[in-house]
Image (cartoon, rainbow, N blue to C red; front, top):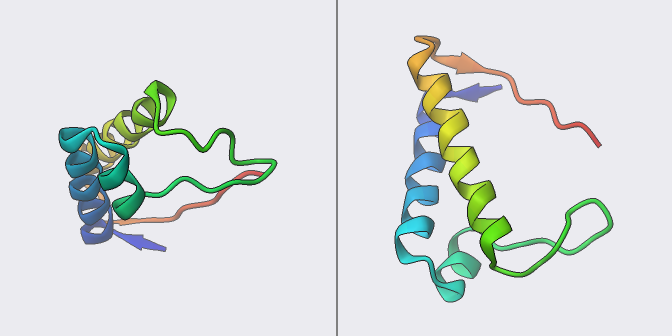
Length: 75
């Protein structure tokens, strides 16, 4: 379960990371995670592209008019 306000908080953090576009800020706010399923750990164009995609997804959720969401990861 993810309430809308949590998505809005995540969007705010993502926007801060993109605005700074600096590894130190990224590492503080949304650090990468090493491991088989997690991909690279560099703060590169792929990392920042994923951050932008997260913002895009949250924007679509907000525009949907719903206030409650469920998140399910797929490994």
